[in-house]
Length: 182
Image 1 (cartoon, one colour):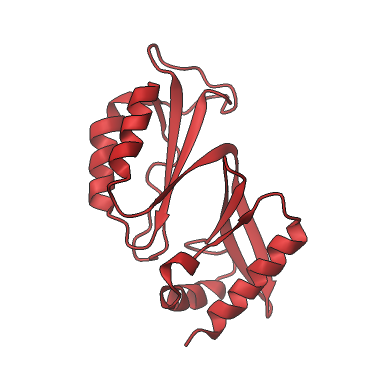
Image 2 (tube, rainbow, N blue to C red):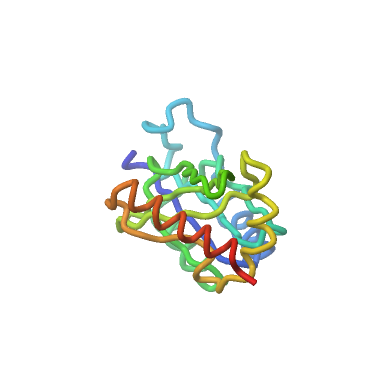
């Protein structure tokens, strides 16, 4: 796994056209096929790392899951250059642990809410409401209410070493706040 790097960009109303341009101009020519062994990837000749990239836009009209399956075989300089240019655009850019990404679920008033979960290399856990939940009753609530929250509160962030119970308690309070937004 030391060969794999995972970069997450998140925010509301991200500049998708410029992000697409950066990916196409800086990464596309280094795109490799899906690895048989995700945890022990084989690098292309000349590459130092495999870069994986994911975008989460909290504006549900701008779903952004284009790149998450792509492996880009790049040098450290190419990886750093991509990030440097990306930082000029709107959004927060975080290096995450490629082994820790998944989903969290919390039930509030009989409705199950789903979240994408990522863990940064600095030990922060990020939870973002899923674009579409397994429980269809959650979607209209989240889609209708999320934009009413301040942008920096449209996701959850806490220490990854907190207990699951504490994380879920914070998530449930966040959901209740979301539901009650006017």
